[in-house]
Length: 337
Image (tube, rainbow, N blue to C red; front, side, top):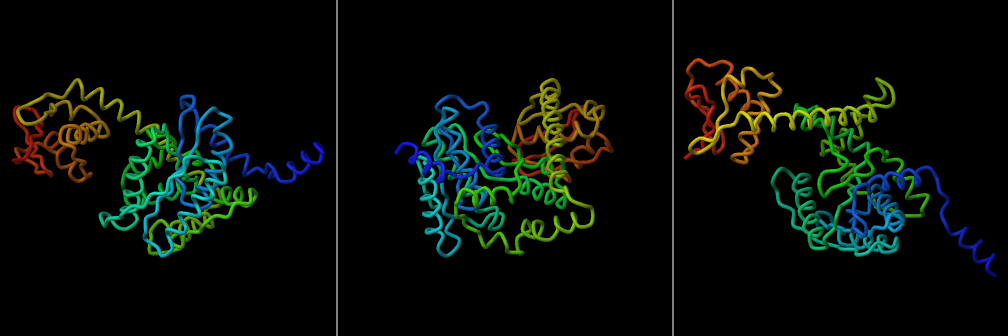
């Protein structure tokens, strides 16, 4: 009887295929640095990426001495979204995840529907993580998502802060699947017998990301050869390393250079001129953001830099909530009245 029972268990247990093994290995790496018995929450939409992530997390977490739950966010933007959310939650419970939270959110209009939905989702996830004292939230972004993000950043001319893509670990947020292709997550779900939801918006060409996914990347691979997504992901990783190093360097330089003045902060014009543009522009952006919480565009940054590099006695520069002038060799960032 015992042999028959063991044989039946083996027949029910899914075969360990490469996609299943790869997602589990990625999740194990995603646990690095978490304290024992910590709670990890999987942001679950019911799609292939997040469902494969949930399955791997449910399998690996107890073996790593961790607890694992799931959060399903219902944006309410599509007909039947509540049913999709409940099916995703049921799948999470079947996988053994606990707790499983379903939360409805209201999506605003700022930045367009995609950005507004993302903001509402992350705000809700962060609030739930705080309520449950979770150590990390796992998000199911894949290597393909990373490549799309880099291409979109390149098209917008957003600089290294955009081209660096998504970090595997960023505070509360962890993205274990950034080295896994979307096709692998779908295969893992199929091999595990998990039915995933396909979001119709993922095929809607009105979204720039969908056009990149369905048209731009395939065309680039057709013309230049395979491996473009991997190359873009490697580029993002290298840029992220360089960008982090420059930001750290600038923070140290700013501590030595910055002077507090009445109503704001100042930087020596001579020091800005002496530094290369990458450092100079970061110092300017850091001064505006650290003192006033204002993020400068490149055009605004260059306009301020000209007060140091191309000084001709020009007037002050007006920024949102800030006026910048040059007095006695100092570039002063003063709160606008």
